[in-house]
Image (cartoon, rainbow, N blue to C red):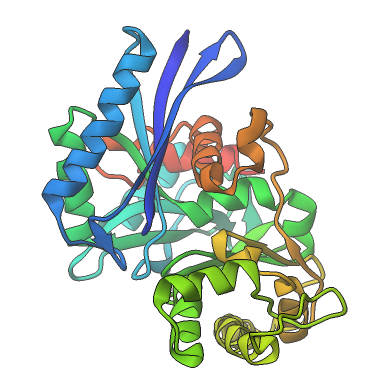
Length: 388
């Protein structure tokens, strides 16, 4: 068994983890575990000691199940309600006859050095394209131009949350190889290149946030995060129906629907119409906020690849019908396009872990071993060569 790596999904309600190994070319799942994230609320680590204890419990369980095998790498996927994304473009004039590898490395370093937000930590810098004069290129080395630009997306999370994760992993004896946004990992699998070229939007509806990414012509146009998720729907039901929060969650899961249709189960003791109004109002608010961005770039109703919905919050009955009505494009549940690891590919609880594992294998983002999590210098150069 080789290339043993543990992938953790730090969620707002649970922390999920899987240890993967390779037997030749075959991927094997060596261990998996899920624990409640009682130490976190809305992206804030409210009890660092409890977080460390839960993490240590998972790691100790893995050590027992691995029978002496050593975890070589640890990857962390996150979805955070306060994640910030910046799109940056840095350029330089080309004084030689053609673009050199040194030009690419110079721009990669400039992007890394200049990307910052007060009280935030950069976790990932993802190159979007090299631009030679006004033309995008996959590999500009050896091509002639007067000006070379690097367009990149920078992902940042609150510094205290970042520090809390690093400290907890250090205490249990695991060094983090890479931290990646779940929406970034999911887009590698849920959306194939044809849809990315046609134009599509992917929405990941989590507990406290909804993350999204828009693609067109094979390139990402923007990543965004809205601090609203399926927990807000539960709270709305508790207030509107005047019930306990646990009863509200049960109503949402068993009787909830975003749109009433002929298959909707009517209950004699509950006003399903009122419940549906509560649910649809909150989801519509989320969709409208996303659509406002699409309107700002004149892509509303113009993404022929449609909308894909993923995450726990996307499992609401008839939610794709509501999305279709708001976005005015075909909408569907996002599906796993690549991975087929036994029952886990159909287990929504572990999908973020699988997606992060796939991305870690595709790009080999061993960024923590460089000077930052951004994947600077040659890593950005290598990323673009593998992008398409």
